Length: 550
Image 1 (cartoon, helix red, strand yellow):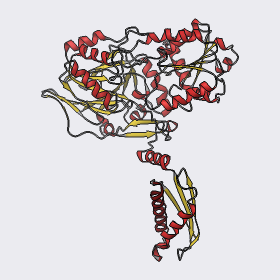
Image 2 (tube, rainbow, N blue to C red; image 1 turned 90 degrees about the vertical axis):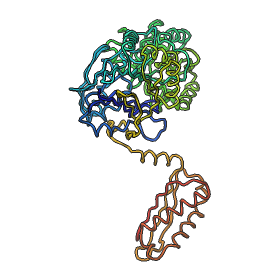
Image 3 (tube, rainbow, N blue to C red; image 1 turned 180 degrees about the vertical axis):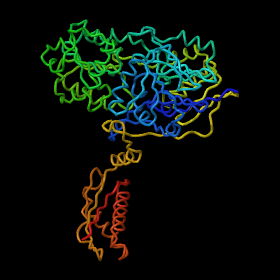
C-alpha cells in the first residue's frame, strides 16, 4: 500500500489572499506559498498572515517551500515561517528577486534556490514529495503552477493563472505539458477560483496596449498611470505607449520605483536610456512630454496617487488638463477609498479613466471557460477549488461537475483532504487555523492579536468614555468628581449631569467596606456608565474608570 497524502490548507480557501497550503506524506511536509492578506478596515493593521502553528508544531517534518509567484498574497508571510523553520525556498528568478528585500527588511536569512519552468525539486531529503515547475501566465513575470509527484499520484496545483493566447512576454502557459500530465494521470487538480463567477475568457494582457495608446493620443497634458507595481508586463506597455508619443517617464511610490529598477536590472523591463526622469526633474518638463507611473490603485491613503489627489505630493501636482489612468481593477471593499481619490482628482481638473470605460486593465486570473479548459486538459480524478471566498470555490466546483469530474470537494482553511489507495475523503478532525495581525513597521515580527483588533473595531464603532474621581482613603467618600470625558460616544453631549448623578447613586449603594476598595469603586463606575448608555443609546462603549485615593 502507498502512503496516504494529506492536503492541509492554512490560508486562501475562504478568502482572497493569505494563500498557504501544506502537503503531507510519510512524515514529510512540503509548503506551497505563504502569503498575506491586506485588511479592508483601517485598524492600524498593515498585514494579516496565516496562523502557522500547525507547521511550527511539525517543524522537523517541513522539508521545503515551493513558491508559485511573487505576489505578496503568496509570499508575504514567509518571514514568519522562515524565522522559525529555516528550510529551502524554491522559486523562479523574479519571484526570489521580490522576496529577498522582504526577508532582509525582516532580518531573516534564508536558503533561496532559483528554478526555471521544467525543473523538478524534492521537498527535502528523503521526501516522497517532489515538485515540477510549470509555466503559467499571470499578472506578474515568472509565474508557475506545480505538478507534485507523490506516492498517491500527481497533484496538479495551478497557482494563480490565466490562459493568455498573446502574452506580452514569455512563453505563455505550458498547456502541452499539462495535457501530457493529464494523459498520464492526474489524481487531484487544485485550481485557482478567483474569477469563477465570470463567464467566458479573460482578455489578453496584450489588449491593454492599444487602449493605453488611445488614451495617450487624446491627452493634452501630463499622463499619470496607476497600476500594480509588480505587473511588469503592464509597466512595459505603459512605457511603450509613452515612447510612441515622445514622453519621458517618472516613477512615483516606493514599490513602483523599486520594482521598476529591479525589472530593468533583470531584463524584464526595457526602457530606453533617454526616457527615465526623476520626480524632481519631471517638474521642469512640458506637460505633453511627461508620463508618470504611480502606485495607489486601491485608494491607499499614503500612496503616491492619493497624495497627488490631495495636493500633498512633494514633487508633483495634478493640474487641469492632466489625464489620470487607473490601470487596475477595483478590488471589492476598496470602492469607497478609490472613489474618494477619483473625486479629488476630478476636483483638480484632471480627466480620470478607469476599467469599464476602456480595456485599460485585464485580469490576471482565469475566467470560467479557461478554468474548464484546464480541467479538460488535466483530466483529474478528483478536484478541489482553491484561492477564493466560498462562493468562488463552490462555483468552480460546479464547473468541474459540468466537465464530468466525479470527485469534488470544497475545502476551507483547516479542513484536511486525504488521498489514499482506498479513495479520497475529507477528514473529520480539522486542524487549527487563524490569523496573525501585524504592522509592517514592526518588520513583520509583531503579532497584534485578534483581541487588539477587536478592541480597535469596538472603539471605532462606539467610542470611549473616561470617568475620573478621587476618594478618601479610609472612608471611601467622594472627594472630587466624577469628571466625565468622552470621545466618539453618541448621546454624551448634554447628558453629563444626568450621567454623573447615576454614577454617584451607584457608589452610594456600595457597602462601606467596598467604598474603600479602588477596584470595587472602578467596577461600580464602569457598570453605571455602561448601563446609562445602553438605556439611552442602545450602545455599550468601553469605559475607563480612574480612581485616585487621597
